[in-house]
Length: 240
Image 1 (cartoon, rainbow, N blue to C red):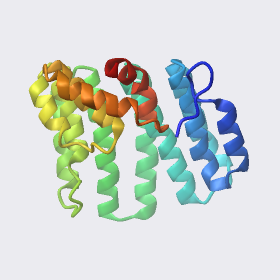
Image 2: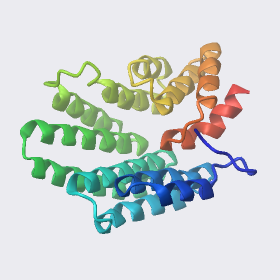
Image 3: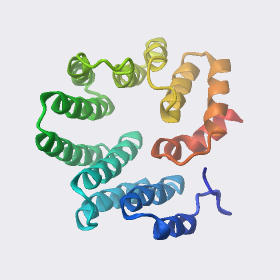
Image 4: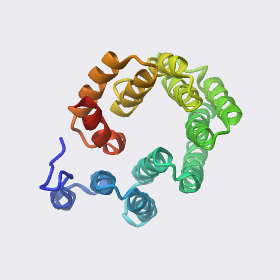
């Protein structure tokens, strides 16, 4: 859970203590949670810069290849999420490019077609978000369809959740609010960031009672993820 200091922000000192005692494979992941404090404090540019720097530093941490790749992907996906959410599209493009390089290198190391497809699907998902935020909805739609094709052979019943999340964004940014609601309802609603966006779409579609209920649920969640760091203040305000 979040530990909040007198400013209403998570305490970096508490995260420093946790990082100092963590096992080496966990340190870069705990460092991410510390860096989310910049998001809570409203300095998202600092958060992106620090997360990118952390991703680069994983090469010198002495971690096995799989753990180093996992840490690098985690930091870059968090940096991409912050950039996209806050309209830092040029930063998002750079970070997503870095993420794509890591994912493709990992796919090459694993060397299977199935795993490569999963990595390409993840890249398409982030590139689709960037296209949507830039207003290129045709490209965003095309990347959503690419994502769908890449995951089609999976037996995972939840394989389409990211597709619906992306399509929710595409519709919402075009002010097609009922369509956005329908898509977001099929996204991963165990993710409070997605749930927040369902509430925003509901509110825009004049379904205010359900929206308010979800805003309160998000506001009360109180665990430190990058998505929650981005929406916490607004969810609390909208929950009243």
